[in-house]
Length: 388
Picture 1 (spheres, rainbow, N blue to C red):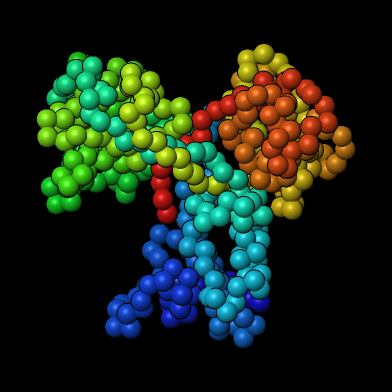
Picture 2 (picture 1 turned 60 degrees about the vertical axis):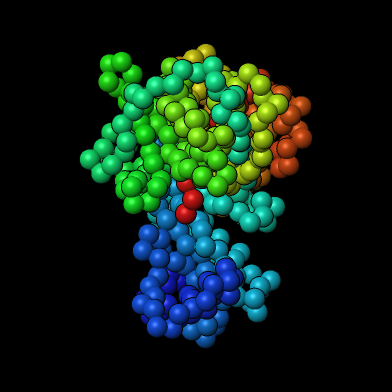
């Protein structure tokens, strides 16, 4: 098996794999090209020509703790039916591990068709989202307002600045430097983003949405806000639709979203859970250093039982005043041991319920109930909405 990056000469083989896996028809007359925003890695048969499996890798940056992490977005994982169960995908993920050192990727994120399958490669559920739908009457106590501006091309900088302020508060939120995730042509697409501003004229919240007349619903694909006032403000604007639309839906909300705190009658809310995606840590030391720690002093140790050799070993962590010093040794005793998937979960979003809860997690072994470890990893929201 030969592993290498694809080039434009491989487009025919790429289309065969992609179309057979994702079930789409290849147009022989189309000007087919490889994805423009991702590098494609392929697993070829020994003849070097027959493509068996592919995956696409894109570069991102994600907010985390005190800074940013370099992220590889993994997507488009596909194998031709006749080459499945032959180890092609496993070899591709081994290549992503190798490239993580070369490309300086700290974490990987993907949207799994099976969480159990990708757990084999160290990926674990990053968090859950709630898809919610409620009658507009649930928000009747919130005053309507029109203190908003519609996002169009001249306002891109404003919404990116606002998004940046909001995203920095949540682990794993993607850094957005372009308008890819915001629609700048609302009248051509009927997809709208409005920014709410306070009395001082400062943008403090936004909502992206479309309207379904057939379902009498305002479908909010994304909502962001800085505080309670701004959340009330943007919901108050959306209430301007309640004269001719019966419902409001939210495509993705964190489990603990303050939106739910605004609804007096929660029994009227339909809620469905989903997986925001899965995360894999490729640089444990960088993640540990970037976390925000307690002001008080503490110490803990963890053993990373990781097939990715740069991660494997025991980490001694001394923290104080919000930061930590990390020392690594190849082996020895530790307070806790973690498989790659277990480390990816604990180090990015923490835990509630103490050591009892940790012991229920697959891939976790507790050797010493060191309370400093619990202090270092309280539950923190990890959330993102991007697809790739």
